Image (cartoon, rainbow, N blue to C red; front, side, top):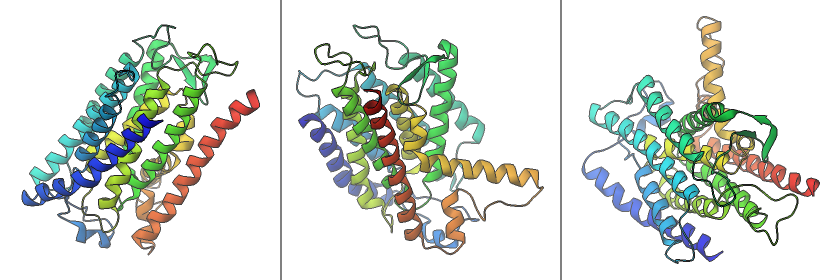
Length: 356
């Protein structure tokens, strides 16, 4: 348990302290956010607010993970490195997008095709690698089966099908997190709750791990390195809580695409490697709702030749346009995130209790 406290604590301290210096650096160089002109008018005052806060978050997660492995008895694992690699790679995609926005002095960075292509490339590399590196029992970090609360034996996707499915999850969750990041503290606070949920899932899988032959029961989990994934989850949660100190309204800094794409990718990676892919839709329901609102808005607009389903998408902007204060929207969306996280963890635990 100490290693989890170290991981979360170090990551929290790095973002809590490091973000202050990162803000000074960004302000000194005038690296600020550009705001959509068609967005809520209350957001126009945010123009110029430092962005790319995801850089500090990624550094914090790496620092927390590394600090928890200073003890030689805690070896670094393939699953932990794969998840960190996914976090960093998507963070780099987001960084390029953020940098183009800053350098071109507009709210548009990478075009949609280029951004999606880079996400797909990252997803394919991760998916391929996640199907390698079997442990002594032959269990890889990811599987070729579709999963809900664990792998479903009769839903075998095959290698190609599994890679396509994992790429879909990675692109879907990274873009969903990106869409959620549109109000002060909204993504930061809700994502912290999501990773706490994945810490609980990983910790429980570690306690009921089939690799522990002496204690493995009939309902044990065939997963790889759940204890190490729990360490990464705690580092992410700790880092996000530290960053929230600076990101809560009025935000002194934004995550930017650097942070939002990395966070969404990490959610997908957790769902894939814990064999809880469909459960991830429940745990990260807020992200799914935000992305669905954009898809529905675009589809409705095209089908009706110009009519809108929402006043503005993503969903949180719709309520702002209805007159809700930004803080009210964020807190109520946090409540939705908290309820979905509790529901997801509840489903996960109930399956083990009923099955046992």
